[in-house]
Image 1: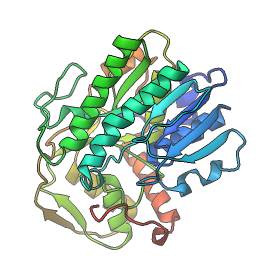
Image 2: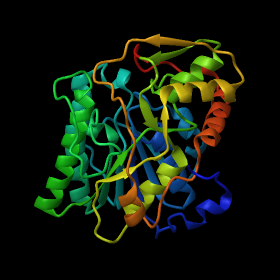
Image 3: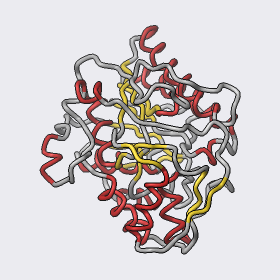
Image 4: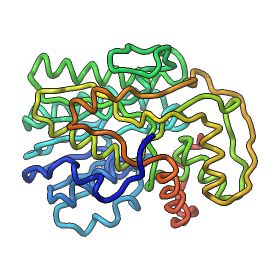
Length: 341
């Protein structure tokens, strides 16, 4: 189990690197906004690019007046020309099933054409580019926990395929650009991540549960809640992401970034009810098609290649911070990106 985090835990965080001009796509989203904040605080010149489909300006409002921060509203399925870029973090794509299934063709375009456009931009600038891939490339795994060598159990025709296969195709493109053109690439596979700045109507399990209990609603669980997930607090992921981008060992990835502590969805629901101080009931709904029954990362490679990185924030602590964030925001100012959440 992860130990409780303290300020000293991040004394071994990635050392600030020399000044860089960094592009973060999906920068107004949940993960991107945290990454932008960290990079701005380190003194880098940060360009945040987002089409605001699931991202929101509220996540980056505190950065808009900073001299080393710039926001561009743009969709990565369309080419963009920028000069002087040293690093690119590609975080642009809706990640919740309801939202990426709303327009599956657009999701596939974002994964594939978006990757091509950004890889071309990286080539033009001789920049290092990091792809935020996903544990969804493993599908409904028959290997548990999942190592990077596992090739997955993915349906290429199901409703989740636009995202699962889109991300797999993006990984292919990254490694092909490296082999053909020498493009400097990095690939991480992100497992379930949560924390402040999640959209209330994000559609993922943590945000759904917290929003429901705070609204006085019952918690909806798909199936009997026995399926398992591993939940990583956002600060831990951002640390891993920056370490991966700046590693100078020639390691390209892919590498799992997640918390190996495993919980059932039922255990998560019960913890959210307890920590929120509510009396919500549980309502069971049918399991969605191709919903994975278990998900847990093997992070041996991350520990080895990312300077001993491992998650520091345990689930109870992270959920407490997340619930406090949801209590602090005005839900009426957030609009669901789609009807499916």
